[in-house]
Image (cartoon, rainbow, N blue to C red; front, side, top):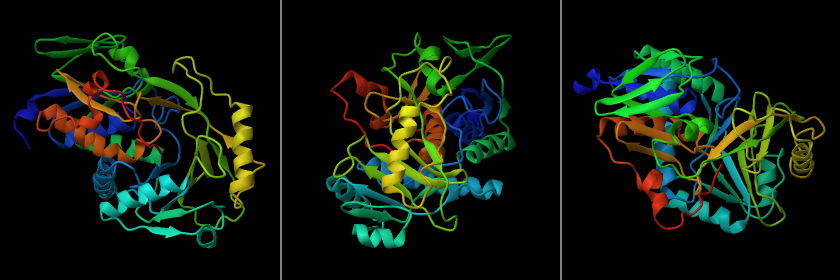
Length: 378
């Protein structure tokens, strides 16, 4: 632990998954940390709530495979420290577009991770709750994360390491000076040596005049939970890639305490987080009912329980984790970021310390050059 770090005060704005992970790693690394969250604990206004998120290593980009491996180790460290189970290792399957599926298999193999290629018939024997088309990729190093529990544990471990966690405290403005930064609240101003902004859909509102951000797109998404017919069935996390019989944007799904969750990726309307609605869109619900009826023989498709959440994404689908002076910004994680949460917190701590450089994949500078290439999500 660096002696110098104990003299620095770091304010983290945003108590969702990434901000909470940053507060945890920074506190463990010896910084004085204040974590500010504008809403109450366990709120549903952002992108970090709910009972389940997918954990998987299967990415077309090897850098994400390696980041998932780092995250898996840190999830295990977090579970051991708190005595709380966060990950369920159910495995994961990909099917649909054969080129996408085979491409993922190649990257997993190149990374030394075990996988299987199955026929639709063989896969259906393993997972009778699902119907498959074309080729099926199964990799065991996958499953799901309990999102609500993870955020609570991250904040609890941050506090145990000395962080000051404050809910119902909204950052209205940031100012940067020669000796650090200030966070202006409704009734106070907090001085900091550095500030980490992990404010999700509110990032552009807070940083728009300080940092040249790319356009961050916030949409209101609407997955749904369906009751399983047989509660004893094991459900892997699954991605149905667009192509073959599926004429859509693709579907993701996984088991959860609330039922079998499925959703479309990034198809919702653009919204502002302060004015978004929580009422389900019946058109989206009908699409998910139709998908469940055709592809999920293990659920009752007539009893959907739709929920809403926010997606905030960058133009290329890759994250922003970068430092500009005393400000470190972490944004654009929606759709596939939750699995990496503790690794992103660790990366943020490294950027704050100056001990590591921003990865090119997550740099703000990438938006000033060539046209970005979209990332494979979920």
